[in-house]
Image (cartoon, rainbow, N blue to C red; front, side):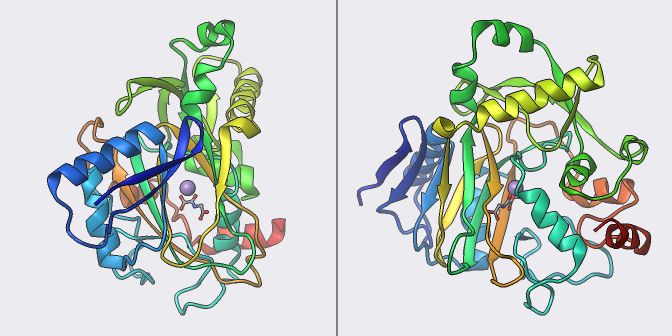
Length: 318
Ligand code: OGA
Ligand code: MN
């Protein structure tokens, strides 16, 4: 077996082939895959042959697989508790017309790092395509290590020691969800350094995206200007590429050294069935197994099934 690694950008993103990842892997191969992921940050695997159970099983190679957020009394389309439904489909498998699901999808089109709003962050995300639209519907990726390396020294000095707050509800507001700043203040958020060392490579990376709300200790307007400047810097063409999918294709991205966003396609006309697992940051402090569900419960809200009041406000605002 020869593992082939074909870089997409010179230092970021690679297509990997030559391994059948739907079968059990020996320890040496598992270590090799983890090392490739650490080095390239985003990997693309074509025609994997993975089903739901195989997707979850393969994800365990990278560590502890998160439980996806669930809502009591609300059934899920997913067969495994670890699978997050990143599709545009409703429970019956039809194209969703629910405004909340559609706004969630709009939020996904903003550059972000999954779960940066959690105190305990996620590292790898594994997104498997089950059904792809005929045109478009890619995922875009951006290299936050390369972007950090290329910052002018004056900016590196300015960022040293800064921390930022991250809120799920803030990024929904960015996407058009009618939360007020006061409402967001009352909901859970997390703070993380703006620059951190990516443990898998020892390289520094920017940690900023659509969930990033304020810079701790900085005037709000100045902080937001800096956040937007850094996101724009990381997502310049030289740091980005898109992956287009066919059913069976999978991308794995490391949220701690990359940003991503869903690409454009007509989600009211075309089905796009994508399912994702997420692996908890191996460096993270302990947290309860179902920490997403807890966070949303603490927020008095649910991510994809809003209360009537929220729904009414979304309808009124759209
Ligand atoms: C996600 C995500 C983008 C896409 O699942 O976290 O951002 O292209 N997906 O579906
Ligand atoms: Mn995402």
